[in-house]
Length: 253
Image (cartoon, rainbow, N blue to C red; front, side, top):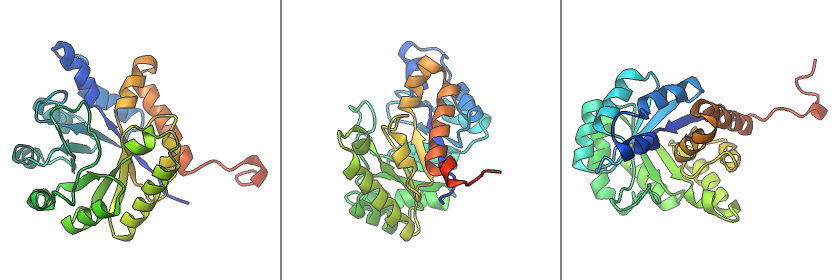
């Protein structure tokens, strides 16, 4: 039986709503507190070059006011490296970033950008920051992560989440997660996961963490953030450790 699966909650889009009008509300730090209260194991925030949602002040407040580990998503740029080294979050997940995209589209080309990534990953690692790479569930990209010495990879699940028939893409994540563990890398997953599609991903025994944001913040409009995170937490836990059926006789007095 596989162990517990951590849930990281991405609070970027609380900041997106705040920034649409300006001012201080809604507060992403308050959202992080609510997620923690509802059972999140960590908080994820993407500090983009154009500061379209999370700001530098948000990062400082999250680190100063929230007890959960902070996973800082960042592009592989000199500016973001300086910020990460100054704040020293628990983890830094290197992601691809295009100014024109609405959200992160696809995984990082770690193989093609190996030379540029190597010094950044090395400096983060030397500073005691857990380095993660947001990549496709692909053997070539995983091989680059191994050569970069990244202890963690996060597999992009967008293709799985948006496929009419997700079976082939689910298999890709399953195989990549197994290969990562075989090579001493801790696999995570995220992007496009919802209450309806999370269970098959959560059931992959090698995965250690899921990072989910946009769906949780959107669903919170209707049911509240704490209730939404609790529902996601319950589905993840059930997928990882399903309750025995009454017919099995397990757990009966």
